[in-house]
Image (cartoon, rainbow, N blue to C red; front, side):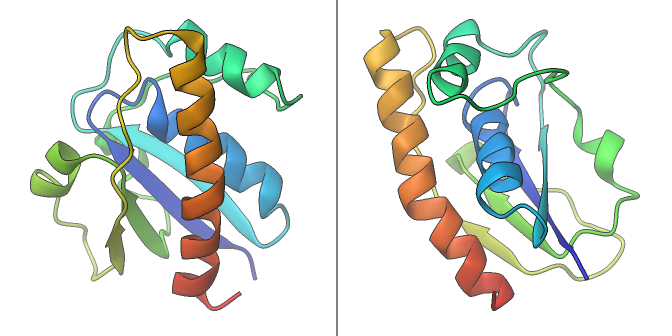
Length: 135
């Protein structure tokens, strides 16, 4: 059975969006990635979308979501990717395992920074999710 991972950040416009796409690609068939923000921005950062497109990953339909949009999903693991989201992580209706993996926020920085964060997410978050879920 497919597991569901929620990647939680503050704005849900960069790190958590890239993590969602990477999970859905790299762990396809095993894990479904979702993302949300504690205070979502209006749109996904263009550079985050570009960083994903540069490695031929799909970005269609990406949009910031409030945590309320995913509260009724069956979530098997929550991953917070920024300290603020960790501090304000909501209480879910049932106990859900959580891990905290902070990543640099490239917002407002050069494209190289977005690429570095994308690659860091792939290098650290994907194995951490595999380990946490035992897959």
